[in-house]
Image (tube, rainbow, N blue to C red; front, side):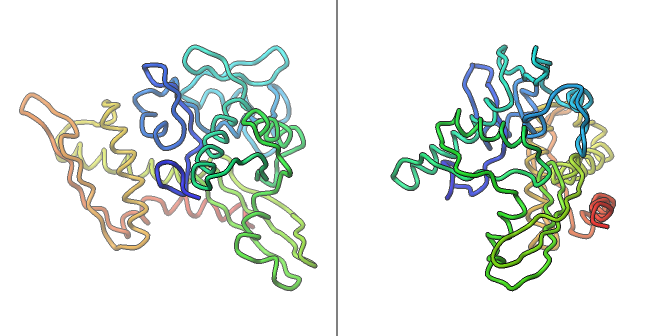
Length: 295
């Protein structure tokens, strides 16, 4: 089902714009660098978790909070609260805004009301994280019929439930996290045998490598550091992700950003060719980093 923007993917990003408008999905992601303190991302990491509790596979909340561009505070019950547009929200409330957009877009596409849903979560989510996800669905106006493990959902999507008894590895490199899950399939049911991964490794890190390389190349050529220019960085981030995706099907692509910045001599344009070989070189250590949790 495509969303209102015509895409099958909706980034899990919520923002309040400078004029107080709520933005969800790609439109929120696009303005993240120019409005970092009011743009909420990676909210899944704070769902159903308490400050001071053992972190398991994830970073402790206290440490993770320092890595975010938005403000995260501790609620009286030790849950998290995020600040957006000078107002506090719980993680399920933020998550509900994303689910609500999916609900509205699905209804527009189907021409019918959507009242029920099955929601997927990482296999390592505990009971309180699963309950927080259910709460988010309820806030969004949905009856959550079931919470399903993401690797199980992926296996079903690929029709693996039709096969005979076997053991399956599901390698899931997402935007911000990496998960590897071992599933046992028997008589049409899946059982998660083990999960591992890295909660701070994903496509965003690959994009960052491309961004850094583009900044370095531009500085070598023009003597200007684009990292100091938020508007330029926003354009670079989008261009880096686009180039990465294009290099899945072509051997090289041009990153062309006219009027990226200016100095006393006038406007400057960025036009750099990125090859697949160069991309592989830039991200090789990140790809290799995913192998360790698989062992």
